[in-house]
Image 1 (cartoon, rainbow, N blue to C red):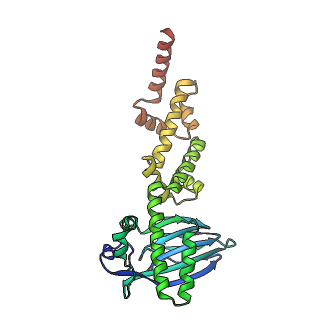
Image 2: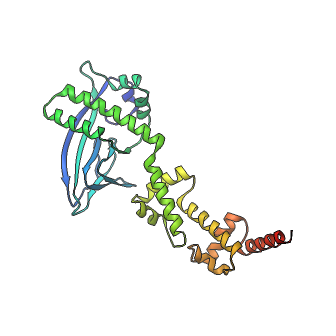
Image 3: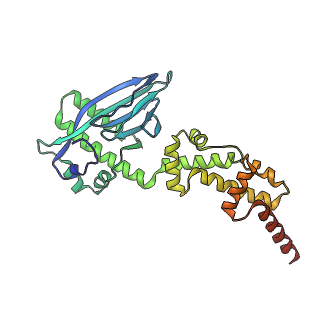
Length: 290
């Protein structure tokens, strides 16, 4: 039994078992893509690093950690001159051999843990509040002493802590909201420039694919759809309230092609820029006469 989210884990007398652990400081290191048969936790004690998956990459700093399920391809990247000290553990599951709580026992007794095992995600990125590091460090210390019972109990404690943090993160997702706020602020300040998804992702220090995913989930719009809708609102104000030539307004809102601007504007408003300005002028004249 290897995967943390395998449904069979909930129905058998399985317990966690530590397979490997280490403290290590990396500097100027780039790992090849690889995967483990074990579940892995990579915890940043100090410094910063990048953990890259096949389609996404995440910047981690002190107190951040990533939980990788078994068989999840990944690699570690640490920049030269910016060392990163990490604590890693790898664990799997085996049939219990003593009178200790099994995964099934935890599922039956703890609703949060049961919900955690139902997430079925290949990875989770979380921010520690010191409790995880304390537990991880004790797992390493007890493993060095060959204290199997203590290691098992600490691993059980770790899983319950992870469950609580993961479910809370899913419900509140404060970090994702912060990224979205930063992305929106960047868009509002740079909409008049030729910005792309990569530019926004670089600003908030996220992989473009991941930023796109959380943005669409929380804002109910893709990044570029939001950029264009914001630009069109600005364009409507410029058309209605100024005499700026229409051919120049496209540049005022960061769109170099006036033809493309007209196409997008009609898509969002149902009118061409010319028709919208005429409609706005007639509306103002009618209002002034009344």
